[in-house]
Image (cartoon, rainbow, N blue to C red; front, side, top):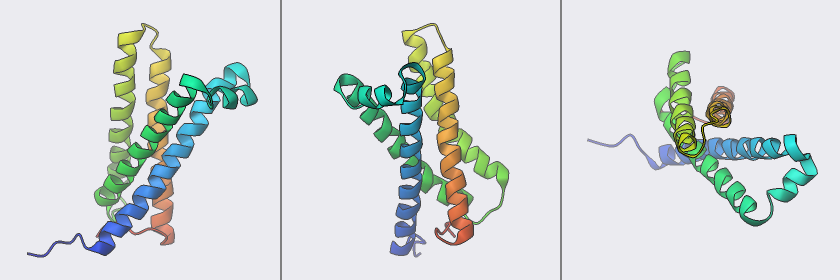
Length: 149
């Protein structure tokens, strides 16, 4: 029995993962900066996120979002294949967004009783993967990326 996971398929998965990872990383960076910018303005938000412990937290959060996006992209490619099923696509986006977002809510509930920031984080997680999914679908339709199968 031969495997359908050829080197070409692995390379295509790597490409899709890289696009999704980059899009979630950039979206996360913008969202993280926007949170600070609301309170301090854009110049101060950038300065705060580039120094000290706040800067380290910013970098780690951004990299986690990028890695999550990479894994999402590879999974999305294999899950949706060449299927035009909206529910399947939305299900993959929802699964990743809810797992990431609800983990933040769970961690947050142990720290504070104010749930709004953590519910916002859950919504932002859905947004991260929705944007990545839209970009991947665009790449599939344009022929820049190749779904599995």
